[in-house]
Image 1 (cartoon, rainbow, N blue to C red):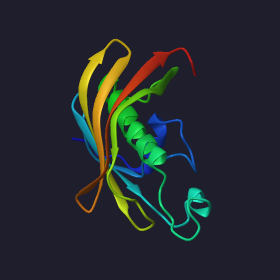
Image 2 (cartoon, rainbow, N blue to C red):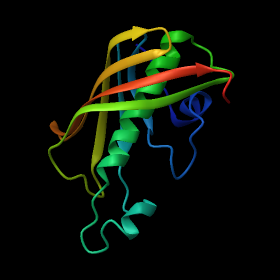
Image 3 (spheres, rainbow, N blue to C red):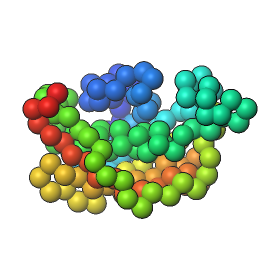
Amino acid sequence: MSEMNVNEIKNFLPHRYPFLLVDRVLELVPGESIRAIKNVSVNEPFFNGHFPDKPIMPGVLIIEALAQATGLLGFRTMDDNPPENILYMLVAIDKARFKRQVEPGDQLILEATIVKRKGIMWVFDVKATVDGKVAVSAELMCAAKEGVV
C-alpha cells in the first residue's frame, strides 16, 4: 500500500492544471488496485459554462479523472520510478454509467482495479463515488506505449 501526494503524482502523470484531476492517492497496491481523491472546487474552470446557474462536473471529466488514476496504477505496477518515454492513453470506455451529479464541494473517491493486462493493453474496472454513492462506473481500456513522448 502506498500513498502519494500531488507532487508525487506529477512525477508520474504529464497532466498539469487545469487538467490534472487526481489530488491524492490514498492507497495503491501495484498489480491490483488504487484508491484516490479528486476534490471538486467551485473554482474549477469548467463550472463557468457547465452550468453557470447549476454547476455540475462533466461526466467526461470524471472518466478522465478515473483514467488518470489508472495511469498511476499502471505506472506504479510497471515500476516504482516515474516512467520515461512512455505515453499512457485511454483507448476505450465500456459499460459507462452516470448515476449521480457531482457538484462543487464534493469529494470524488476514484477507485480502479486491474481486470487484465496483455502487452501494452490494460483493462480496469473503475468507479467514482461521492459520500459512498456511485457517481460513475465503467470499464476502461488503456495502452502504455513506449517512444511516443
